Length: 161
Image (tube, rainbow, N blue to C red):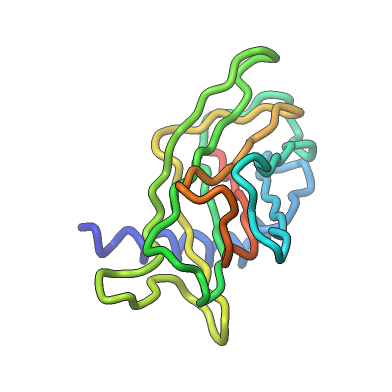
């Protein structure tokens, strides 16, 4: 069953890109995606990445699936990447989920897809994810290193149910 999860995620992203789901979204479909490049000198623990869903048609959309995309170089030193994904439920309350994203197997073989020096991995935030316009989704690494080298790009893709 675990072996089917990466295949399922790849199919979702492939279908999404064929149907125009991957992109900022035009606001009419309540889909949202955004990506941010990580500075070449590393991703600081104290520098979370914020994505604001500002292209949604409705101010609050039904719960859906949130995918996190990570692109890393082959110079990444670890087997996995721990992330905290949080979202604003109200103006003063944030909820957080922790993701342990495997990037390599026990033998050191990269698990993502890619060519050359970069690999990309997708993972799903567990459960139904609520999304509201102008309430940010924040992603930060929670690794033991203050500055994380080898991560090139992080993004989120939201698909409502």
